[in-house]
Length: 44
Image (tube, rainbow, N blue to C red; front, top):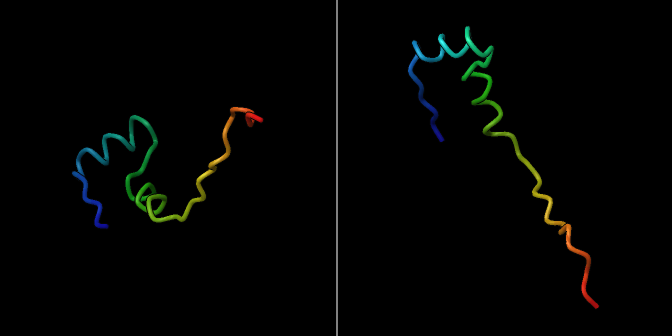
């Protein structure tokens, strides 16, 4: 997957919110485990 962004908006968000799109791109490719447990008790 290729992620693209507007460099001017990246700079604006980096200044306003201290979030860097380049760092977020790394997070998108990290593996994750889905928790499939249910909050509902099992019915007997």
